[in-house]
Length: 385
Ligand SMILES: Cc1ncc(COP(=O)(O)O)c(C=O)c1O
Image (cartoon, rainbow, N blue to C red; front, side, top):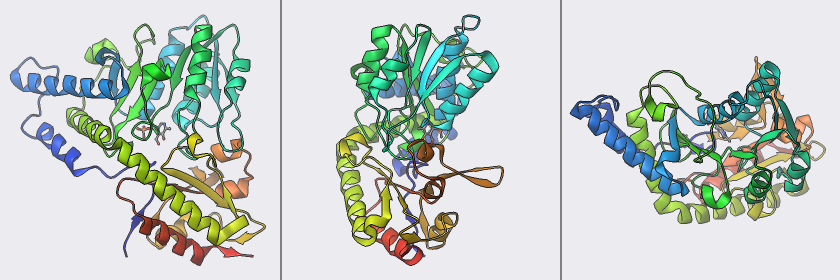
Protein backbone atom coordinates (compact mmCIF):
# COMPACT_ATOMS: atom_id res chain seq x y z
CA UNK A 1 0.00 0.00 0.00
CA UNK A 2 1.35 3.44 -0.94
CA UNK A 3 1.29 5.68 2.09
CA UNK A 4 0.25 9.31 1.88
CA UNK A 5 1.69 11.50 4.63
CA UNK A 6 -0.35 14.66 5.21
CA UNK A 7 0.61 15.35 8.83
CA UNK A 8 3.58 17.69 8.47
CA UNK A 9 2.41 20.07 11.20
CA UNK A 10 2.92 17.15 13.61
CA UNK A 11 6.37 16.43 12.31
CA UNK A 12 8.27 16.31 9.03
CA UNK A 13 10.50 13.69 7.47
CA UNK A 14 14.14 14.57 8.11
CA UNK A 15 15.71 15.90 4.92
CA UNK A 16 18.61 13.75 3.64
CA UNK A 17 20.90 16.81 3.58
CA UNK A 18 20.07 17.42 7.25
CA UNK A 19 20.98 13.87 8.14
CA UNK A 20 24.27 14.26 6.28
CA UNK A 21 25.06 17.42 8.24
CA UNK A 22 24.34 15.62 11.52
CA UNK A 23 26.34 12.43 11.01
CA UNK A 24 29.86 13.81 11.64
CA UNK A 25 28.74 15.09 15.07
CA UNK A 26 27.55 11.63 16.03
CA UNK A 27 30.75 10.00 14.86
CA UNK A 28 34.21 11.58 14.43
CA UNK A 29 33.29 15.07 15.69
CA UNK A 30 31.54 13.85 18.82
CA UNK A 31 33.21 16.30 21.22
CA UNK A 32 31.42 18.16 23.99
CA UNK A 33 31.13 21.81 22.93
CA UNK A 34 32.26 22.90 26.42
CA UNK A 35 35.53 20.91 26.31
CA UNK A 36 38.70 22.88 25.80
CA UNK A 37 40.42 20.31 23.55
CA UNK A 38 40.22 20.49 19.79
CA UNK A 39 37.32 17.99 19.50
CA UNK A 40 35.31 20.25 21.79
CA UNK A 41 36.36 23.34 19.85
CA UNK A 42 35.20 21.77 16.58
CA UNK A 43 31.75 21.22 18.07
CA UNK A 44 31.70 24.72 19.56
CA UNK A 45 32.55 26.35 16.22
CA UNK A 46 29.67 24.50 14.52
CA UNK A 47 27.32 25.43 17.37
CA UNK A 48 28.12 29.13 17.10
CA UNK A 49 27.89 28.98 13.29
CA UNK A 50 24.40 27.49 13.66
CA UNK A 51 23.44 30.22 16.12
CA UNK A 52 24.44 32.76 13.45
CA UNK A 53 22.37 30.94 10.81
CA UNK A 54 19.25 30.87 13.02
CA UNK A 55 19.73 34.51 14.07
CA UNK A 56 20.09 35.64 10.47
CA UNK A 57 16.97 33.72 9.46
CA UNK A 58 14.81 35.66 11.94
CA UNK A 59 16.64 38.97 11.76
CA UNK A 60 18.10 39.11 15.26
CA UNK A 61 21.53 39.05 16.80
CA UNK A 62 23.24 35.72 17.60
CA UNK A 63 23.42 36.67 21.27
CA UNK A 64 19.60 36.63 21.32
CA UNK A 65 19.36 32.92 20.36
CA UNK A 66 19.26 30.13 23.00
CA UNK A 67 19.19 26.45 22.06
CA UNK A 68 16.79 24.20 23.97
CA UNK A 69 15.42 20.67 23.62
CA UNK A 70 12.27 21.59 21.63
CA UNK A 71 9.38 23.95 21.12
CA UNK A 72 7.83 22.77 24.38
CA UNK A 73 10.91 23.65 26.38
CA UNK A 74 11.36 27.00 24.63
CA UNK A 75 7.80 27.99 25.50
CA UNK A 76 8.28 26.83 29.11
CA UNK A 77 11.56 28.77 29.31
CA UNK A 78 9.92 31.97 28.02
CA UNK A 79 6.77 31.83 30.15
CA UNK A 80 8.19 30.47 33.39
CA UNK A 81 11.28 32.62 33.00
CA UNK A 82 9.22 35.80 32.71
CA UNK A 83 6.87 34.79 35.53
CA UNK A 84 9.64 33.67 37.89
CA UNK A 85 11.38 37.01 37.45
CA UNK A 86 8.28 38.48 39.16
CA UNK A 87 7.82 36.01 42.00
CA UNK A 88 6.52 37.91 45.01
CA UNK A 89 5.09 40.68 42.80
CA UNK A 90 2.53 38.57 40.89
CA UNK A 91 0.87 40.00 37.83
CA UNK A 92 -1.33 39.37 34.82
CA UNK A 93 -0.78 37.62 31.48
CA UNK A 94 -2.92 37.85 28.33
CA UNK A 95 -3.12 34.74 26.16
CA UNK A 96 -5.73 32.76 24.23
CA UNK A 97 -7.81 29.60 24.48
CA UNK A 98 -6.32 28.35 21.22
CA UNK A 99 -2.67 28.09 22.30
CA UNK A 100 -0.73 24.85 22.07
CA UNK A 101 -0.65 22.86 25.30
CA UNK A 102 3.02 23.81 25.73
CA UNK A 103 1.74 27.33 26.44
CA UNK A 104 -1.71 26.62 27.90
CA UNK A 105 -0.58 24.06 30.44
CA UNK A 106 2.38 26.19 31.47
CA UNK A 107 0.08 29.16 32.05
CA UNK A 108 -2.34 27.01 34.05
CA UNK A 109 0.57 25.88 36.23
CA UNK A 110 1.67 29.48 36.78
CA UNK A 111 -1.89 30.36 37.81
CA UNK A 112 -2.48 27.45 40.13
CA UNK A 113 0.94 27.20 41.79
CA UNK A 114 2.17 30.77 41.81
CA UNK A 115 -0.99 32.88 41.78
CA UNK A 116 -0.47 34.63 38.46
CA UNK A 117 -3.63 35.81 36.74
CA UNK A 118 -4.24 34.86 33.10
CA UNK A 119 -6.90 36.11 30.67
CA UNK A 120 -7.55 33.58 27.90
CA UNK A 121 -9.07 35.32 24.88
CA UNK A 122 -11.52 33.38 22.71
CA UNK A 123 -10.65 33.32 19.02
CA UNK A 124 -13.22 34.17 16.34
CA UNK A 125 -15.05 31.55 14.25
CA UNK A 126 -12.02 30.78 12.07
CA UNK A 127 -9.49 30.91 14.86
CA UNK A 128 -8.08 34.43 14.53
CA UNK A 129 -7.70 36.64 17.60
CA UNK A 130 -8.98 40.20 17.33
CA UNK A 131 -6.17 42.59 18.42
CA UNK A 132 -8.77 44.98 19.87
CA UNK A 133 -9.69 42.26 22.37
CA UNK A 134 -6.04 42.08 23.36
CA UNK A 135 -5.98 45.81 24.04
CA UNK A 136 -9.16 45.56 26.14
CA UNK A 137 -7.72 42.70 28.19
CA UNK A 138 -4.59 44.62 29.23
CA UNK A 139 -4.53 45.65 32.90
CA UNK A 140 -2.30 47.81 35.02
CA UNK A 141 -0.41 44.73 36.22
CA UNK A 142 -0.14 42.95 32.83
CA UNK A 143 3.51 42.06 32.25
CA UNK A 144 3.25 39.54 29.40
CA UNK A 145 1.19 38.86 26.28
CA UNK A 146 1.58 35.35 24.87
CA UNK A 147 -0.16 34.72 21.54
CA UNK A 148 0.85 32.21 18.92
CA UNK A 149 1.74 33.41 15.42
CA UNK A 150 0.02 30.49 13.64
CA UNK A 151 -2.31 27.94 15.15
CA UNK A 152 -1.15 24.34 14.79
CA UNK A 153 -4.67 22.94 14.25
CA UNK A 154 -6.39 25.49 12.01
CA UNK A 155 -3.41 27.46 10.66
CA UNK A 156 -5.16 30.68 11.80
CA UNK A 157 -2.75 33.60 12.03
CA UNK A 158 -2.54 36.25 14.70
CA UNK A 159 -1.91 39.81 13.58
CA UNK A 160 1.33 39.84 15.55
CA UNK A 161 2.34 43.29 14.31
CA UNK A 162 -0.84 44.77 15.80
CA UNK A 163 -0.33 42.82 19.05
CA UNK A 164 3.31 43.87 19.37
CA UNK A 165 2.25 47.48 18.84
CA UNK A 166 -0.18 47.16 21.74
CA UNK A 167 2.39 45.39 23.93
CA UNK A 168 5.17 47.90 23.33
CA UNK A 169 2.74 50.80 23.84
CA UNK A 170 2.12 49.58 27.38
CA UNK A 171 5.69 48.38 28.02
CA UNK A 172 4.55 44.73 28.16
CA UNK A 173 6.72 41.84 26.89
CA UNK A 174 5.33 39.94 23.89
CA UNK A 175 6.02 36.22 23.54
CA UNK A 176 4.82 34.43 20.42
CA UNK A 177 4.82 30.69 19.85
CA UNK A 178 6.10 30.75 16.27
CA UNK A 179 6.69 27.00 15.95
CA UNK A 180 4.26 26.58 13.05
CA UNK A 181 4.99 29.82 11.21
CA UNK A 182 8.76 29.60 10.85
CA UNK A 183 9.60 28.35 7.36
CA UNK A 184 6.11 29.09 6.09
CA UNK A 185 5.96 32.87 6.60
CA UNK A 186 8.39 35.72 7.00
CA UNK A 187 9.48 35.64 10.61
CA UNK A 188 11.61 38.71 11.06
CA UNK A 189 11.22 39.15 14.81
CA UNK A 190 12.37 42.77 14.77
CA UNK A 191 9.92 43.78 12.04
CA UNK A 192 7.16 41.89 13.82
CA UNK A 193 8.08 43.42 17.19
CA UNK A 194 8.40 40.17 19.14
CA UNK A 195 10.33 39.96 22.41
CA UNK A 196 10.39 36.15 22.46
CA UNK A 197 9.80 33.64 19.66
CA UNK A 198 10.27 29.89 19.18
CA UNK A 199 11.53 27.65 16.36
CA UNK A 200 11.37 23.85 16.45
CA UNK A 201 13.57 22.00 13.97
CA UNK A 202 11.36 18.96 13.46
CA UNK A 203 8.64 21.09 11.87
CA UNK A 204 11.03 22.15 9.08
CA UNK A 205 12.55 18.83 8.00
CA UNK A 206 15.13 18.98 10.79
CA UNK A 207 15.65 16.58 13.70
CA UNK A 208 13.37 16.23 16.72
CA UNK A 209 14.43 17.49 20.14
CA UNK A 210 16.08 20.75 19.16
CA UNK A 211 14.74 24.27 19.17
CA UNK A 212 15.80 27.88 19.42
CA UNK A 213 14.29 30.47 21.71
CA UNK A 214 14.76 34.09 20.66
CA UNK A 215 14.97 36.47 23.61
CA UNK A 216 15.27 40.12 22.68
CA UNK A 217 18.16 41.94 24.33
CA UNK A 218 16.81 43.70 27.42
CA UNK A 219 14.03 41.13 28.00
CA UNK A 220 15.02 39.37 31.19
CA UNK A 221 13.42 36.02 31.96
CA UNK A 222 14.81 34.23 35.00
CA UNK A 223 17.18 31.36 34.39
CA UNK A 224 15.06 28.33 33.59
CA UNK A 225 17.32 25.28 33.51
CA UNK A 226 19.96 24.97 36.21
CA UNK A 227 23.15 23.04 35.70
CA UNK A 228 26.21 23.90 33.66
CA UNK A 229 27.04 27.29 32.22
CA UNK A 230 25.88 26.45 28.69
CA UNK A 231 23.88 28.92 26.60
CA UNK A 232 25.43 31.91 28.33
CA UNK A 233 24.50 30.48 31.71
CA UNK A 234 20.78 30.55 30.89
CA UNK A 235 20.15 26.89 30.05
CA UNK A 236 22.40 24.26 31.57
CA UNK A 237 22.96 20.92 29.83
CA UNK A 238 25.37 19.49 27.28
CA UNK A 239 24.32 20.76 23.89
CA UNK A 240 22.82 18.30 21.41
CA UNK A 241 25.47 19.02 18.81
CA UNK A 242 24.34 16.59 16.09
CA UNK A 243 20.79 17.96 16.29
CA UNK A 244 22.11 21.53 16.26
CA UNK A 245 24.12 20.78 13.10
CA UNK A 246 20.98 19.37 11.48
CA UNK A 247 18.90 22.32 12.66
CA UNK A 248 21.30 24.73 10.96
CA UNK A 249 21.06 22.82 7.69
CA UNK A 250 17.26 22.71 7.88
CA UNK A 251 17.15 26.48 8.40
CA UNK A 252 19.44 27.05 5.40
CA UNK A 253 17.21 24.83 3.24
CA UNK A 254 14.16 26.86 4.37
CA UNK A 255 15.97 30.07 3.50
CA UNK A 256 16.63 28.83 -0.04
CA UNK A 257 13.17 27.33 -0.58
CA UNK A 258 10.77 29.49 1.42
CA UNK A 259 9.25 31.26 -1.60
CA UNK A 260 8.81 28.03 -3.58
CA UNK A 261 7.45 26.19 -0.54
CA UNK A 262 4.86 28.90 0.04
CA UNK A 263 3.59 28.66 -3.54
CA UNK A 264 3.61 24.87 -3.44
CA UNK A 265 1.57 24.73 -0.23
CA UNK A 266 -0.87 27.39 -1.44
CA UNK A 267 -1.49 25.46 -4.66
CA UNK A 268 -2.02 22.16 -2.83
CA UNK A 269 -4.35 23.73 -0.28
CA UNK A 270 -6.48 25.35 -2.99
CA UNK A 271 -6.56 22.10 -4.94
CA UNK A 272 -7.67 20.04 -1.95
CA UNK A 273 -10.28 22.57 -0.86
CA UNK A 274 -11.70 22.61 -4.40
CA UNK A 275 -11.90 18.81 -4.48
CA UNK A 276 -13.57 18.62 -1.06
CA UNK A 277 -16.12 21.32 -1.82
CA UNK A 278 -17.09 19.78 -5.13
CA UNK A 279 -17.55 16.36 -3.55
CA UNK A 280 -19.11 17.23 -0.19
CA UNK A 281 -20.62 20.69 -0.81
CA UNK A 282 -22.54 21.98 2.18
CA UNK A 283 -21.72 18.93 4.23
CA UNK A 284 -18.16 20.24 4.51
CA UNK A 285 -17.43 22.59 7.37
CA UNK A 286 -14.08 24.34 6.99
CA UNK A 287 -12.37 25.18 10.28
CA UNK A 288 -9.40 27.06 8.81
CA UNK A 289 -9.58 30.73 7.78
CA UNK A 290 -11.38 31.28 4.48
CA UNK A 291 -9.27 34.32 3.71
CA UNK A 292 -5.88 32.92 2.65
CA UNK A 293 -4.06 35.92 4.08
CA UNK A 294 -5.32 34.94 7.55
CA UNK A 295 -4.11 31.35 7.56
CA UNK A 296 -1.01 29.24 6.98
CA UNK A 297 -0.70 27.99 3.40
CA UNK A 298 0.07 24.41 4.47
CA UNK A 299 -2.83 23.67 6.87
CA UNK A 300 -6.44 22.87 6.02
CA UNK A 301 -8.75 21.78 8.82
CA UNK A 302 -12.27 20.58 8.07
CA UNK A 303 -15.15 18.58 9.54
CA UNK A 304 -18.39 17.18 8.19
CA UNK A 305 -21.83 18.43 9.26
CA UNK A 306 -23.51 15.60 11.15
CA UNK A 307 -26.92 16.48 9.76
CA UNK A 308 -25.64 16.12 6.18
CA UNK A 309 -23.01 13.42 6.40
CA UNK A 310 -22.84 9.99 7.97
CA UNK A 311 -19.57 8.74 9.44
CA UNK A 312 -18.07 7.63 12.72
CA UNK A 313 -16.19 10.67 13.98
CA UNK A 314 -14.20 8.65 16.53
CA UNK A 315 -13.03 6.17 13.89
CA UNK A 316 -12.36 8.50 10.97
CA UNK A 317 -8.60 8.86 11.45
CA UNK A 318 -8.16 5.15 12.01
CA UNK A 319 -10.17 4.35 8.89
CA UNK A 320 -8.00 6.78 6.91
CA UNK A 321 -4.87 5.22 8.38
CA UNK A 322 -6.07 1.77 7.31
CA UNK A 323 -6.28 3.19 3.81
CA UNK A 324 -2.68 4.41 4.09
CA UNK A 325 -3.39 8.05 4.83
CA UNK A 326 -1.79 9.88 7.76
CA UNK A 327 -3.57 13.02 8.95
CA UNK A 328 -4.34 14.49 12.36
CA UNK A 329 -7.75 15.03 13.86
CA UNK A 330 -9.69 17.16 16.21
CA UNK A 331 -9.22 15.21 19.37
CA UNK A 332 -6.71 14.82 22.13
CA UNK A 333 -6.42 11.45 23.78
CA UNK A 334 -6.43 11.91 27.56
CA UNK A 335 -6.41 8.87 29.86
CA UNK A 336 -7.65 6.62 27.09
CA UNK A 337 -10.65 8.75 26.12
CA UNK A 338 -10.96 10.97 23.08
CA UNK A 339 -11.69 14.57 23.97
CA UNK A 340 -12.65 17.13 21.33
CA UNK A 341 -9.86 19.55 20.48
CA UNK A 342 -9.80 22.61 22.75
CA UNK A 343 -9.01 24.77 19.71
CA UNK A 344 -12.07 23.66 17.71
CA UNK A 345 -14.31 24.04 20.76
CA UNK A 346 -12.86 27.52 21.30
CA UNK A 347 -13.85 28.56 17.77
CA UNK A 348 -17.40 27.36 18.39
CA UNK A 349 -17.53 23.90 16.79
CA UNK A 350 -19.81 21.42 18.51
CA UNK A 351 -18.05 18.49 20.22
CA UNK A 352 -19.04 15.89 17.58
CA UNK A 353 -17.83 18.06 14.70
CA UNK A 354 -14.64 18.80 16.58
CA UNK A 355 -14.03 15.10 17.28
CA UNK A 356 -14.49 14.27 13.60
CA UNK A 357 -12.24 17.04 12.29
CA UNK A 358 -9.42 16.31 9.88
CA UNK A 359 -6.26 18.42 9.84
CA UNK A 360 -4.30 18.13 6.63
CA UNK A 361 -0.83 19.67 6.76
CA UNK A 362 1.33 19.65 3.65
CA UNK A 363 5.06 19.18 3.37
CA UNK A 364 7.54 19.70 0.55
CA UNK A 365 7.10 16.20 -0.84
CA UNK A 366 3.31 16.25 -1.18
CA UNK A 367 1.70 16.39 -4.60
CA UNK A 368 -1.78 16.97 -6.00
CA UNK A 369 -2.18 13.24 -6.35
CA UNK A 370 -1.91 12.98 -2.53
CA UNK A 371 -4.96 15.28 -2.35
CA UNK A 372 -6.78 13.01 -4.79
CA UNK A 373 -5.82 9.97 -2.71
CA UNK A 374 -7.28 11.58 0.40
CA UNK A 375 -10.48 12.50 -1.43
CA UNK A 376 -10.90 8.94 -2.72
CA UNK A 377 -10.50 7.55 0.81
CA UNK A 378 -12.93 10.08 2.29
CA UNK A 379 -15.53 9.21 -0.36
CA UNK A 380 -15.34 5.59 0.75
CA UNK A 381 -15.75 6.50 4.43
CA UNK A 382 -18.12 9.50 4.57
CA UNK A 383 -21.60 9.06 3.11
CA UNK A 384 -23.75 12.07 2.27
CA UNK A 385 -27.28 11.83 3.65
C1 LIG B 1 2.32 25.60 17.97
C2 LIG B 1 3.22 24.60 18.62
N1 LIG B 1 3.89 24.94 19.73
C3 LIG B 1 4.71 24.10 20.35
C4 LIG B 1 4.91 22.83 19.89
C5 LIG B 1 5.83 21.90 20.61
O1 LIG B 1 7.05 21.76 19.90
P1 LIG B 1 7.98 20.47 20.15
O2 LIG B 1 7.28 19.31 19.51
O3 LIG B 1 9.27 20.84 19.44
O4 LIG B 1 8.14 20.33 21.60
C6 LIG B 1 4.22 22.39 18.73
C7 LIG B 1 4.35 21.01 18.24
O5 LIG B 1 3.41 20.43 17.76
C8 LIG B 1 3.36 23.31 18.08
O6 LIG B 1 2.69 22.98 17.00
